[in-house]
Length: 296
Image (tube, rainbow, N blue to C red):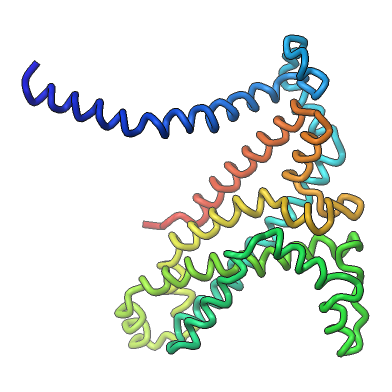
């Protein structure tokens, strides 16, 4: 073995030595639980089997079959789908509008607005949910504001019609700051000479937005859509703190359904629900990559 080969081998061993702590932690606390829960989804493992794990039986896809036969799981899929289909486009539109407004402004007031819009992102979701629960009470701030213009507001969180829209509104308010910052960074990377050329060709503001800004912003839109869709598909804290999945399962998400199954000791079914949600997240991300990918 030459001197150079020995040196490269020594460097590789040192590099692996530095990586080893992370590999061990990742393997023990991430990879093993992931593989274990995946295997658990093909068994009838329940809380009764904890003291006698050898009595657990392999049942193939039975947990997945039972899952889709459960009306509450189908309801959770519907609720999660509505939360995502309404919440993500609404969040992206509001965030883009705010980013465009802040990008065209200047001065300290713009920095103040940036901080104000981003503040909900760094606030604890549990604390935010508790505050919104008080705001949306029958005698809360929202209904008091509506009463000033002669409208009697509903019992937002205990009405099966208004409970989910209330959670969507709160999620939009909380997540719009993240996308606003991402979109603002994307807008500031758009070359000004392209806009100037479009202006010389007679393009107005709306035309430049449609034909210049949005096409150049596609990679940024894709990043924002993927980041926020993962969070929306896993929405849990809002329902846990504000509605407990009710009323009448109107806010029962897949993540909250999975949490309930773990609480009931149905570990096999809870694991199966987790991997159905994982598959949905992967499919949604794939669709977003195909729709919003760059045309270059």
